[in-house]
Image (tube, rainbow, N blue to C red; front, side, top):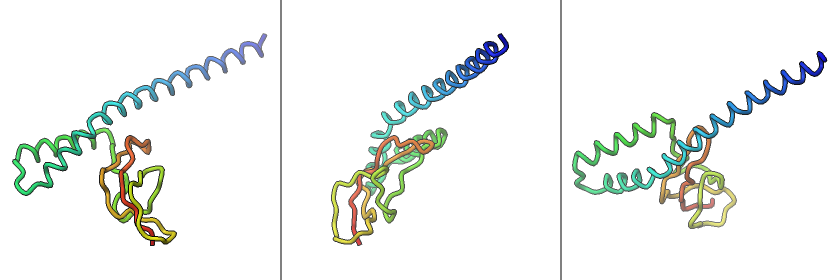
Length: 128
């Protein structure tokens, strides 16, 4: 009877841990979906910021969007000059014949949240 009680207590403890883990994963998945839908907006702000004469309102909105990403610990995937990593980068063009592959140009930034990839970076790869 004591063994049955101990097994039941262990099963209940495992259930509580599993339920808490599923709850936290659900929150991260929901947050990832929301942030992923905002990434094209960030891309468009960056295109607008690259123009010669950018209105102050656009740069202010861009800074607010960056602050929003910082709040949720969203980081950019390593870009130009970083070693090519297929788990973070999506290669659209490759040049050179060497073995060492390096990101030569970033066409679209990639983002990750707490080491979970939201969107891979679209890059041109140069081999040395």
